Amino acid sequence: MSWQGELNRFLASAYKNWIISRRNIFTVFELFFWPMISLLSIGLLTRFLAVEGSMVSFLLVGAIALTILQVAQIDVAYVLLFDMWSKSIKNTFIAPVRSYHLVFGALLFGILRGSVVFFILVAVSGHLFGFDFLAGGIFPVLAFLAGIFAMAASIGITVCISILTFGQKADVAAWSLSGLILLVSGIYYPVDVLPPLLQALARAIPLTYFLEYYRSIFIPGPHHLMWGAALASFYLTLGLILLDRAIERARRTGILLRLSE
Amino acid sequence: MSDKVMQITEKSVQAKGICKRYKSFFGRSATILKDISLDIDASEIFGLLGPNGSGKTTLISIFSTLIYPEAGSLSILGMDARGNRDAIRRCINISTAKPNFPWSLTVKENLRHYGMLYGLYGAALSRTVQDQMEAFELSEFQDHKFEDLSTGLKQRLSLAKAMLNHPRLIFLDEPTTGLDPDISLKTRQLIRRIHDEDGISVVMSTHYMPEAEMLCDRIAFLRHGSIVALDTPQNLKRHLKLGERICITYQGEADISALQGQPGVLGLKAENGRMEIAVDRGEESLDGIIKLFSGAKITDIEIKEPDLEDVFIELAR
Image (cartoon, rainbow over all chains, first blue to last red; front, side, top):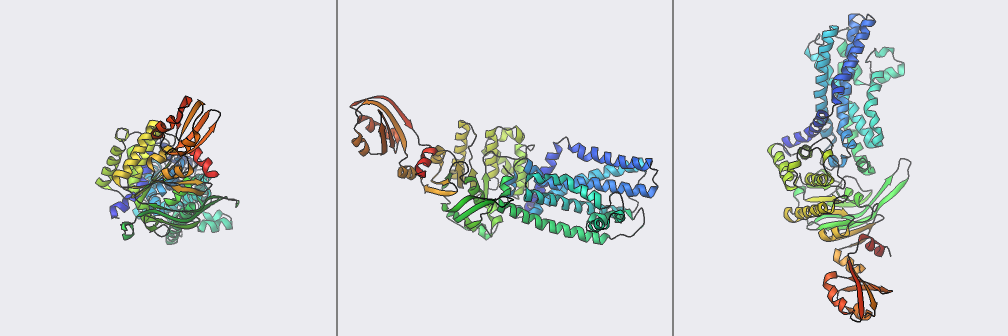
């Protein structure tokens, strides 16, 4: 198959997600309403508590990271959720597609939507709370976003694996996994405040390291960006392998057929 | 395209000892298919018949590599299904009963999406989508969302989708279920055209005996996950003596022994002035049969086609 044909197999998922999102009024809520609510509530809380400048940065970085993560990870999960909800999953898996075609195609659209949300939140937080996201230059922003999108891909893959393993009821994972990330990866507080067991868990989550790295621009401190990048790559690779296995298992158990009925 | 894909074969499906069980989370299992073995020629339209739950959809899903069998060997278009799944998937496609596609995508967008999944791009993608919309008379509905289509249009979209990758073998799972009679007829004509004009091998499942008779060169009857009969429609009816039935209500005497020897008569049953005669070809046999009722007064004649139920009652004996 030519490279253009192979590229289109990736783009197929992005194309489907784009059209479905374009026609869905609730996309407005995902892209604008909830992100703005999240940012404004945290920003206003910092004002009410008279939080000093560096702490405002700390909290706003967390709020923005969580929002982008949620937007991008749901897009990856949508690659299977849309098919499952419309009971058309067999039409996708009768085609010669692999997990990476589906995941990276959907992730591409997730990156697009996540970037739109990021630019909106950056503009609003800069205007209302005087927060300068480019304080450290462009590279830290790109590294930070890359880390969030890699994490989003891993969460989205986990949702897909859950659906293929446990069936339709597992779609609740699409909205609950980012809650776990919120709790343990230091979105609104340093992971040092967590109990030892949760701290160990936090150290296994790449987002923890990307947050520490980006925050180190505003509040100087140690960070382990490369370790975070290595973990993110590891989870992404492992996730794709496990997703392929989950697809094969769903073919063996017949779940793939039941998800279409 | 790999050499394996290009390999010339005379068999579209070769299955041996296919078994399938579904296991529940708590370890309970249900056997769906038992020791299915059959060879399907690439040149034929092959029918899988059986009641609900007989395993037709599961068998078609296994043949199309959508799900895997628990035991047995399977070769599709000459390629071993275990080691060549991607190559097989490039050469086959499926259209299912009660087809479903992403709801908010239009006809054209759905076809584009699935065309992209098969690696079509650029002008070839646009042309293929356009060709299939024209072939299945979907052009005027191209901007209609899937959720707004009638059942017949959804079925035509499903068939158009199944043709996107120019398959060598197409699986149709109950393609006319739930369709109005006129749409069913049109769908059958489309299936016939796909086979005759495009040279595509067809394996289809159906509930309807007339549909199978109209389209299929050979039929396998499935019951409780096993093949209970496998032959051409004519041979099946002949062997099971389930041709058309001429039901004659009469007063007086009829020559039963002469009727039994009449050419085309497969069997008969007479009681209380009513005779049911199984014949090979109803209308052609009718003249000769009526002559043998010269000593009686015929009050009613009805010609009935055998239905699936008749066949299964016979096969279950």
